[in-house]
View 1 (cartoon, rainbow over the protein chains, first blue to last red):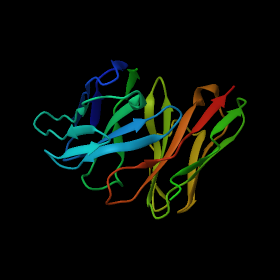
View 2 (view 1 turned 180 degrees about the vertical axis):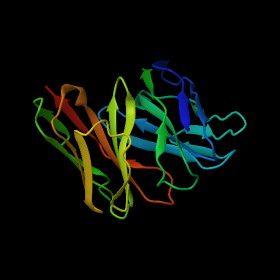
View 3 (view 1 turned 90 degrees about the horizontal axis):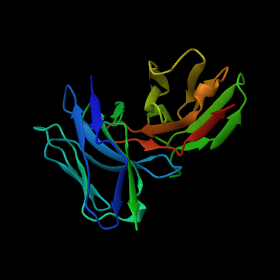
Amino acid sequence: GNSVTQMEGPVTLSEEAFLTINCTYTATGYPSLFWYVQYPGEGLQLLLKATKADDKGSNKGFEATYRKETTSFHLEKGSVQVSDSAVYFCALSDLAETSGSRLTFGEGTQLTVNP
Amino acid sequence: DAGVIQSPRHEVTEMGQEVTLRCKPISGHDYLFWYRQTMMRGLELLIYFNNNVPIDDSGMPEDRFSAKMPNASFSTLKIQPSEPRDSAVYFCASSLAGRAGYTFGSGTRLTVV
């Protein structure tokens, strides 16, 4: 079946540091890939997505590239801010280009950014 | 759009009591999902609906849990009787087929004492 493996947390960085959160996946078909962010006390919010190989999703300074050859979708940001402190979830869907299919989530990575 | 609306935001109840969680999806969305989040088990998909019809309830932990979607704008998740191990944050999410990604509600934090 489908699965998502994320870098274990927690991750603690200083403001303006470079961020990488690793995500690899196992899927039988050609999934769409997502990063969600959960701020304290809130629900998950879609951060970015990519629907086919070599696509790059980007939003709010975060980027992730869909790498089929390495089955990875690593999240990166060049300079983190205190406000980026949150839990980040990598996810995949069974079918590309459809939100109707169920999402498979990774375990989440807690990021804390210190001033 | 107001987004996915869940109520209540917080619920504290005694063991053995019935608990009902409510969700209003985004208008026009045809998929609705119920998730449970705990520190130990992370995010778990409990059940999801398409056009108000349950598609997969294999994640529902046991018969004490039931979910309904009587119409396109409302769903409930019921736990009867509740137990302390049901304490968690329960999220509802909705989506529109053909557009990637879910929209989550803010969740209901359930505490069973």
